[in-house]
Length: 625
Image (tube, helix red, strand yellow):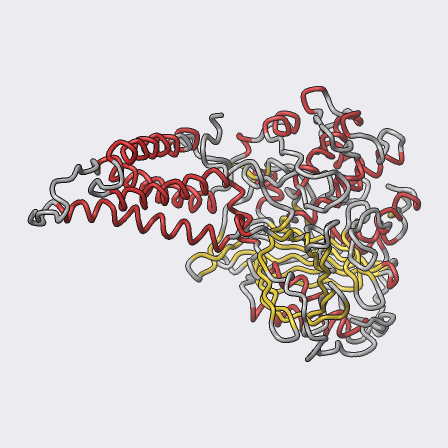
């Protein structure tokens, strides 16, 4: 991705006053010919090719708005068009920019030291016991390196009536610290919410009040809110875009998503309001004569504070780097179940872009936008198309890798398998099968580039020289750790499949045996091991598995928390353990010459492996012990 200075010849001279007041579509002027047509073409193509009902986008330079347009619909059923000046879209995690701006304001005011232990700002009931780990600093929250495990359930709630204070939520949903702070990135919504609570503590204002007084109102962002009851406000509700999700191959409209972790992604905004914040950042922390950050603290948005490697994209004070060949974009994406957004700031070009999609196709479309801009304006040459590389000899790249952003202490742990990456070795390249499947060719030891030349991965080794993890060059949110054979997803699927097969065959075979004629054994009369414990074990195992599958299918549509019966359900495996102990006792009592000894032994081994699998994924005694 080679870049050269952006040559987008068309300036639209628009004063900030016009920007703040005019909701209409800007017409292209002679200074940037081609820019509008190029973006229009990209978005129109995305609308036609992806599951996207509507797209809204704005772009600014230091002097004002240089692009504003929308495509598709805010509501398909009502044929309601999107409007960057009027339509409100959910930001998802892109809204974290407001939390980090607020934190920087308080740091500038001297109320927060970014290098300080977070316990200094927390009440005793929320303070963390670090054990042998180093303290978590405030800056670790901004760079997503506090060492927390990830917790997804409970980020959203079913209604505004279920929202509790940040303090109550943070106390009830405490993640485990599973790695040394400041060393490995693992994107954390909890960490952002914790930062917002620190802002509440030092400012004496609620998060909502703080943003309204110190960011939204001064920046004339009168159609922006972090409050979750915004859909109940008549003057704004009619302009909130419907969000869509994919169901059985069709786009379905969703209900308004209510966030408990609202500082991490529960904001609602128009395109023009987001243009205001982008303008303020490009102008060094000032808009319309009002300074919301000093230039020193505004520049921290573009100051790297963490990266696992100098060549890899890292974190600034709240934004991610995206490395093009000769230029760095600072950005943040956002995803709810229905909306997908992207904020991209290009300091060298003094440009910024915000784009919002109200359908599932937006997840990849926002990055396709950056790649298209890179090809059109920044790259000096076309990307090299890699067709061969150095011959690969090292076999230890192969294997399964799990993201550092995952859960460790609850059954959510199993969800990490959805983000698993598998790497296999061909003649002179790696096949990396993750969110997409691609070929990667060797550049140097432990460093590879994909076939299109647009992404790199780098492997990191432990002190013994073994592969520890790898990272994508332009994804600083997580790294992917290599798992051992015992943690292999393939092995776990094999255990699960064989267990289910044996659990299914056991009651059926015993039922069939009731109707068979009795035959005299060649060994004479032998004791017969009672079959009822195995039958009960099998039926319980099958029923339990079916119920758990239904629970996870339910949670996909209702990710608000574990069902009330989860604790009771987690006791079922303990009953299975008792049955297994009884079956082991039977084997010992009746001996190896007894009838059903082999089948009983196979069932015990299958049941034991199944129980160990449940133990690994935290299903046993969850919410009870």
